[in-house]
Image (cartoon, rainbow, N blue to C red; front, side, top):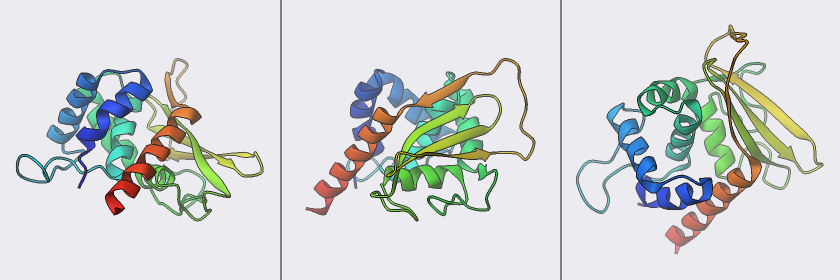
Length: 183
């Protein structure tokens, strides 16, 4: 098992953040029960690095600049449902966390040759997020998710974006880590 904490220095460097800050966010997510660690101390303990745990971590980072607030928002966003579909038409997932996780794994109803997760946008304060999928033909397919059926129409809203290059790097990192574990 690889712990999420061992991947955080790479992620922090890629996103231009500090490892210490990311470790603080991880501790807050564990304390808030948004991420569940394996019991014990040392090797084999801690939060396992999975596409789902990483999706939860990314949602917390995008949800708010304040850790304690981000934990609750991340828990809500993880459960957000597609707004126009019963399930995400690209991944088949019925919630935002699972759709992101499937995208980070490079799989889904459409294989990676057909489409790939390209961008994640969280509309802070609204409980809304949009995943953008880049299709092989160059089309960008947005799939919106919401924690509620009623979307607030704030005049002042802040959006947090994880751009394509960052998403592609994370997908690549996960593939390499999984290949290393398979050996």
